[in-house]
Image (cartoon, rainbow, N blue to C red; front, side, top):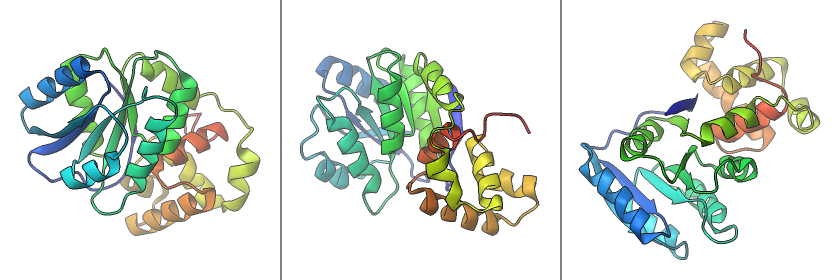
Length: 233
């Protein structure tokens, strides 16, 4: 398991951790549910193999983490992810699963849709359980072979997005976005720049609004593509 980046918010406080599993392969879904159910501190509150009506099901089940099959037909998975992430009420962490191997385009689209990480569908039970706990705590994670895809995607350092993303930012906001792209949480950024935690939170909120994203993970993708967060301080 590879930690990908930190997302700053309060850890999920529910006990046990409520998890929903969306996987179209019934055998794989059963195996995932069994591994999660056997783990301490996790309760599977919903499992399904289809996307239609998922928003209502998730709303009723109120999970903390949703394991989402990214290989649902067409763009169903990404549409569902956007719906779940944009939903009001309790915070939900979406963890994607794919059997397509190193599909960089799929991973990038999933991250921009709000997924907090991706796992290969052949990941073992302990890896799935660990990933669920990590995203519930506010981390973005990736499991082999998806970790290599994400690493390559976010360290490419392409400059094509810079004209779209950076002009709206002040020097301080760009500096903070650079630290966000390096995986630092708000508290670490505050210590690094000798700022109050509240000041950093305000700056991060302003940055997300200016670059037109709704999550820290989306901001990291765009920041890395604009060349931020790719060199050591």
